[in-house]
Image (cartoon, rainbow, N blue to C red; front, side):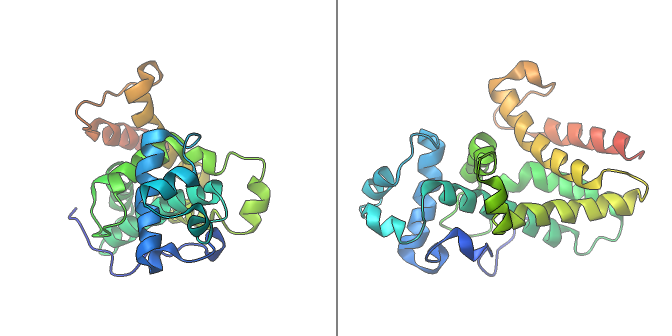
Length: 228
């Protein structure tokens, strides 16, 4: 699958920002540097004060775009979810075979960080690192129900729905298509993390950032669960 360009900006819930960061140079700089800094420092150590210093701006300016750093994290993770959905739709648009679609979905889960949509202000590889290490903090919170009611996780739910439809197309009798979809995506992230930091929790190895074995493992599980 070839690298592709995104002809328009990634569409995200308007409730995730006060001012659209993709629509201004400063906003795009906020996105760019927040990805880099959260990856470098970790979410807990990241602050708007540090971000403002890095981009030579003010905290007040950043607060004009995002209510707080938690909402910013949801925004960044949502950007990645929507990017993966874009890849899947683009790569499957000329494919009618459901099993081949699932292969493409798994490939997209594993290699989305390697694709380049020519969006200069988002480094997909580093954003993927952020999703792996910090992503669950976006929705494992006390405010999950309120934020969900505001549509903050629609991009993830749309991604799960996209995958579940293919699962049902392959096996209409499969009882848990949504659970399968979310587990497949979470496995694609968790087992990269496990291989790098907690190797006793996985059977795959990742050397020199080569993740091909992960794709093989996910296909193995998919084939057996769906009776392929």
